[in-house]
Length: 88
Image 1 (cartoon, rainbow, N blue to C red):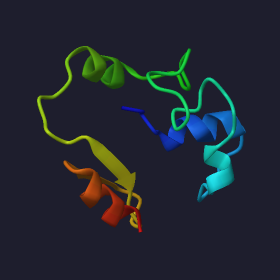
Image 2 (cartoon, rainbow, N blue to C red):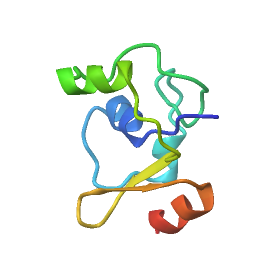
Image 3 (cartoon, rainbow, N blue to C red):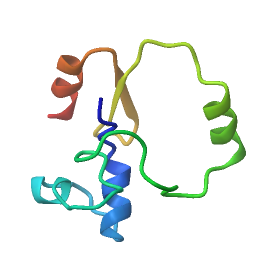
Image 4 (tube, rainbow, N blue to C red):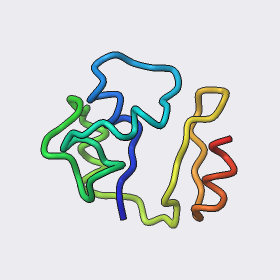
């Protein structure tokens, strides 16, 4: 499956946007995880120690999707259908 991470689009654009639009998701770049499968060819940030530890020892969970909620917190879901509901 494609990673489809908004963070990779923000990286491509170079300037943060409050809300991405469809044309942003179609920018042709190897970092565009909406167009290309797998991880981008390089890092999009400089992760801290906690992030590195989490990547080395990921939690055993069923959560596959997340979206930023209106309060600035992430909402995690198990199904794509629930994810789409939270995107609205």
